[in-house]
Image (cartoon, rainbow, N blue to C red; front, side, top):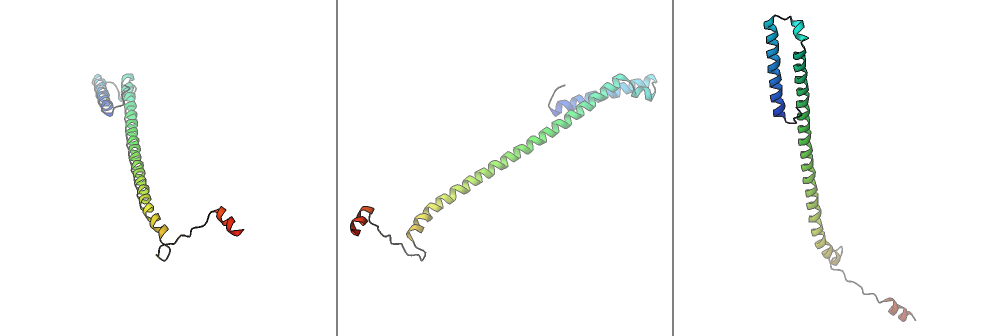
Length: 128
C-alpha cells in the first residue's frame, strides 16, 4: 500500500469502503446492536485504513500542487533571465555605435578637434 499514485489510492479506498459496507450489512443481518457494530474490530480496522488512504491522497494532492507551483516559478524565472539577457545584449550594441559618434561630436553637434600634445621628452627639450 505504499503507492504514491492517486488512482491506485482511490481504488484501494473504494475497495475498503465496499468491504466496510459489506461487514456492516453482515453484522446487521446477524442482529448485532449498533453499539457492538461500532466496536467491531474488523470494521474499525477497515475504517482506519480508509482514514490512512484519505491522508495519503491529501498528501499526494499537496505534493502535486507544490510541484506544479515550483515548475511555474522556475519557468517564470527562466523567462525573466532570458529577457534580462536580451535586454543587456541590445543596449551594448546600441551604446557601441553611440560612443563612437559621441566622441567625435561636441555638445554643439560639431566634430571635436583633438590637440596633439608633444611627448614628455620633447616638452623638456623646448623648455631648456
